[in-house]
Image (cartoon, rainbow, N blue to C red; front, side, top):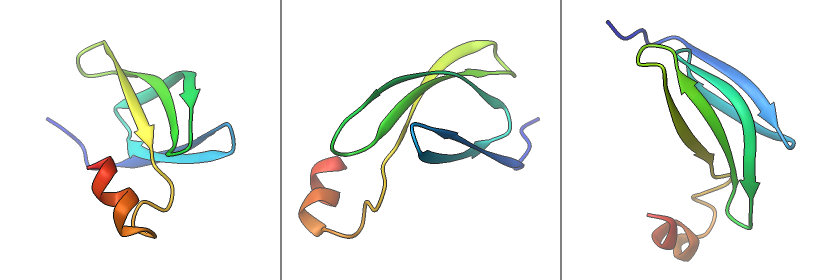
Length: 67
């Protein structure tokens, strides 16, 4: 059963807000569109990558490219 609880953590001065089942492991990279970190899903014990894209909707062209 999945919980809707969220938690926040910061990597490279970027704030991530994710489901509490994801626990951060390490930063993977950063670029012009955001920061990527590796996390582990505590329900499945599998590693995932999560990308936080800051201010995604400030520019319509950038938002379209990202999608």
